[in-house]
Length: 135
Ligand SMILES: [Ca+2]
Image 1: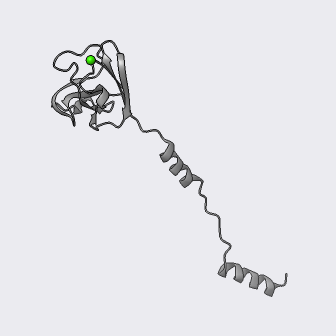
Image 2 (image 1 turned 180 degrees about the vertical axis):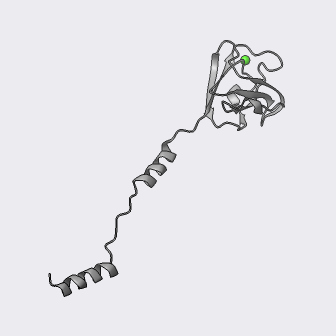
Image 3 (image 1 turned 45 degrees about the vertical axis):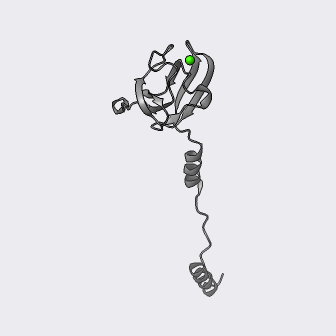
């Protein structure tokens, strides 16, 4: 290359730099991770009869969210099993109202006034045991 040609090429490259490929691996990774990363969730199982028998419902979902019991088990629940939580509060009426009690463990036979009476519940994340609410 003649010196003049080299200078022209260098000038051209400076004026019109070749587009560089941006590394997308890290940002793509973060997006994918945020999509597939499982949310920690509470699991509560309910049964219509004592000793975890009869019609049942397994709820898996968010903490700190009042959840109404499905119609087919409303006012029929006799045993419960909260898991992956520091406790749940169970209420006699919908939308987490009226009488309530808290449990951190499975109960094989609910007693009056809660037997055949639970209509909603609210659970707290593990490690948050100081934040129970009482109705
Ligand atoms: Ca029952």
